[in-house]
Image 1 (cartoon, rainbow, N blue to C red):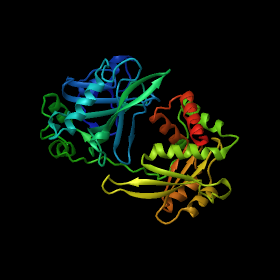
Image 2: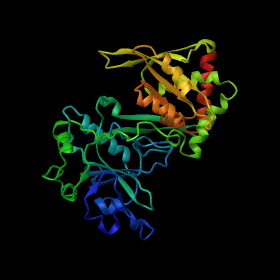
Image 3: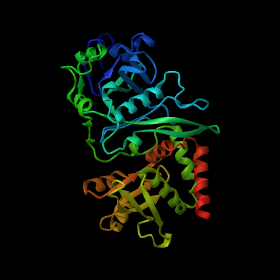
Length: 390
């Protein structure tokens, strides 16, 4: 950890922790000392909100309704705006965070682009001690393969029956391992392009080319703890599902199919097999791959397991799904629990094309699509039941 006394002079390294607690109050806030921005909030910046020199995005992992996250394998960074309560228009927020997001993405996606008006975006996450923070990298708006119409999306949610909108913004973390103090000083002096500018950011600024920071995990499969819910609130969402189907686990298949639709995004059909003849597959789905002009349809086999958290999906169940995947199909295994280490490692080690949607993934899918309380999840399940019965 880099202590507070050194923050104003140090270089910055990816995933380094900054800001050892000393006073126990706002004076310990490290981002202010590192970059000269304000000492609180998710949105912080240098310059005016309509003429930014630097933008800082901070997240703390403690907002289950708006789950900011980084996909280390692709470099994608999803960040939600600051209109998180009902009663206000999308852009009417105290720190003008959503106005800033709209401006940044408008400049990046303009024809011709106005990337010279997009500031360097510094991303931080909450650290492990006191007010310490982790530096997660330098981000740019958008992502490879994501159309401009989808990188900044206004999503609807509801709270206590009141509806409201907030932004979901997709950035990409660039392949920049460290940031020099010289570049930070240049940015403050309105010289973001200088001899100290990291090459990936300079290339994006001048040509619009994104070089993601991709970091494959050292262990290719997730442990039990990494597959299960993180908090009591997350567990409550998952239990809403498991308790509903505890006495009729086969009915979970329709729920699992809908989770696939929400997660994959381009599922055009889902045909469920009779319970007595599923042969290791509970449904066959079709998934569209490619652009509007050159789409192809790929089949996948889905297996659904509504298990208690203490009951893992083992080698036998996985082997049944593997044996039923046809040529040019992939598999999706949806479970409310987790895969046993041996089963998961066999999928990875043997290169089987199977996507695992475990308990924690289910919670993330639900929250991402606005189902963030047991009540809203229950209503969603009721809607699924009604659609099947009709």
